[in-house]
Image (cartoon, rainbow, N blue to C red; front, top):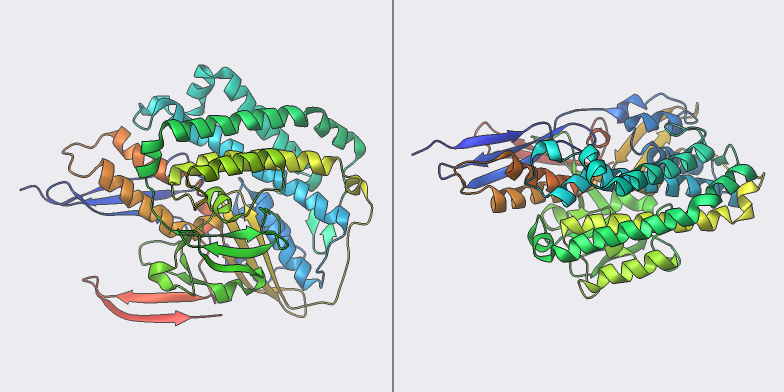
Length: 480
C-alpha cells in the first residue's frame, strides 16, 4: 500500500503577496486536508507605534501597492475621528469618494482582465504557458486594450485626487489637501461615457460566463456562509466609502443591521491558528464554528438592498434573479459581482464629475480632539478596518487592522479543500492543470496576502495551545 503524501503549491500564483497551499492525501490518494498558508509576516501594526497621527494615512499605504488608496482612506477616516471631525466638508468627502471609486475601478479591472481572465478564457486546465495576460491580448486584442485603458483611467483619477497614482497624500485628518481643477474634470468627462460602455460589456462578459457555466459555478468551491459589509445608513444601499455594518446569514436572515462600525470589536472576534500568520475572524454573536463570514464584491451584492446608480442596479437585479433574491453562495460569481462594481464606480465617477463641489475651496475642518479613532471602508477585496489610539503627543500607541483578505480567510480555506476534494481526490497522478483548479478558487477572492499579516501586540485574540500529537491542551481569549 502506498504511503500518505503531501502536495505543496508554492507559491500560489497570480495573487498579490506570497502564500502556499498544502494538500494532504491518504494512501488511497484521497484528500484528507487542504490549507492555504500565509507564509510572509509584515507586522505593520507594530511599525505604526510611535508615529505621529498625521503621518499614518501616508505610511499605511506601504502595506500594499495594489490598493494603497483603501488603506489611505480608512486611516484618514480614523484620524478624522481623533481630530474630532464627524462630518467633512462636501468638497472633501466628494474628493475622497472620487479617489475611492477610481481605486476600486482600477483594482477590479486589474484582477478580472489580468489575473482571472486567462482561466476563464482558456479553461482551468489549460497549459501554464497559456494562462497569462499576454495570451489574452494575443487572442483578444480589443479586450486587452480596454483592460489597459480602463485601469489607466482609474489610476489617473487617483493621481488627480491623491497627487500620485500610488502612495498619494490627498486625504488628511479632517479633510483633503486639494480640489479638482476644471481642466482635469473635463479630461475625465471626455471619456467617461466610453468607460461606462466598456464596463457594461465587462459585466456582460462575466455574466455570460457565469450563466453558460452554471453547473461548474454552482459546484466549484461554493458553500453557504454568512456575509458582511457596510451599507448606506439611510436605506441599506451599496456604499463603498461610508455606512453602517450589516451581516446576513446564508439564507438572507439579518444577523445584525445598521450597526455603527465603531463597535466592530463588539461584533467580531479574531481567532488564530498555529499554521498561518493570518487571523480567522468570526461574528461574536454566532461563535467560531457558525460565525465565520465572507466579504468582498459578491458579499456586497448579497447584503446591499439596491445600488443607487441605474445601470449597476439593473445588473444587480439580474444577478439576484439567479438565486431568487437569496444570497448567492457561488465563489466564482465574485467575478460577475466585481464587474457590476466597476460599472457602479464609473457611474459614480460621472455623477461626481458633474458636481461643482469638487471645485470648492473649503477643504478641511477641525473639532475637539479625541484619543481613539476607527475608520472602516469597503476596499476592492471587501471590508477594511483601521483602529488607532494616540497619546497626548499625537503619537500612535495602538493599532489594529482587519483587512479584507483576513475576513475571507475561513472561506478561502474551505474553497481550497472543496476544490481539492472534488478535483484531486482519488487520482493516481495529479497534473499541473488540476492543481490550477485550487488556485482558481483562491483567485476568485482576489486575495491580497501581503496586506493580511499583522498580528502582533494587544488585540482581540483567541489563542489555542496544542501538544505534539495535535491535542488541544489549553485555550485563552483576550479582548481589547
